[in-house]
Length: 143
Image (cartoon, rainbow, N blue to C red; front, side, top):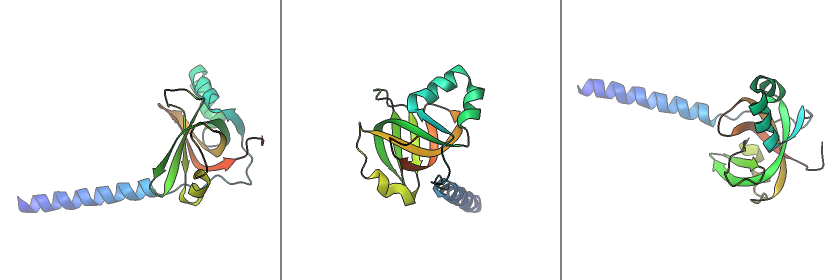
């Protein structure tokens, strides 16, 4: 019985280590030399997915996109940060923007309720929030 427990404990340790390694691996930050394929308001992404999910996946998925919105929250994420953008709605759903460790300093200046443009790599699915990874800050005046 003790031997089974040791094997189970070892197996669990390996699984947890593997999960943490995968979860902590950073995707590359969106390349500043790559112009965004789309420049869109956070709320528009949800409208596009509601109207035609296939078209929205083709428009935003796995592409560098620029998203404009209002900062709803700013959180730590291990070595990185997560900024939630929306259109100022009280429901606090929106575009969840994942910043890698090399971009965290740029998020320190952000304030809840402020307008911002974030550039990142769009996902191909929409759950409660839309995920934008490898994020960096953009300039609101830029297209």
